[in-house]
Image (cartoon, rainbow, N blue to C red; front, side, top):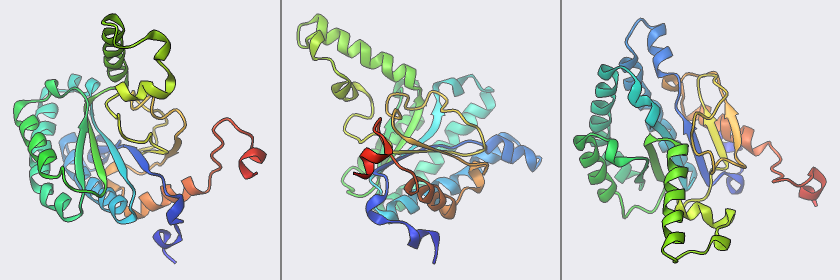
Length: 247
């Protein structure tokens, strides 16, 4: 029986977040530039997106480019942006075929005009799709996101449209860029690193973490299923005891 067939369909996470790490190391091991690794990472994106869509997972969020990544060498950043444009162009038909809706979170104003135009075009074209919501975190950092939320809340308090006592942990999420989505129940990071790198700090409060040594360009559907199998083998207690959960 395959890993996919072993998965319990009604125990799949509604939202999976992925830190796609290891492109540079993958390329270096092959004597190539980091950009070569990023290009080969596109296949992993396609495989994981298809796997999530086939399983009926509702949300998949991929950490594609952080605000900190702008400090990388100019040539690499420019190549990444060009790759983003070409990938969105080539994958739009596949998204439509698989009923996938594209979404993005992050500081859009920082993106080059060509990237933003292509991104917005694909988002509009796929907006009526009702299957998986694929979110690309671009020019994103969780600290930036939380600060932006605090600014919005502060403005509302200042103009009297929101009372301080009405600010709760339950409604704070409405001011984040992931508003309307369930929080991720599973976060996957490839390449063997064990940190979350300023990614969805608020939303990952009760997520299960899965770390793998596999470098992102080598990550495939079977590896995604393995992460889901691991997730389904865990007891999610949310502060309760194991006995309480079983009861």
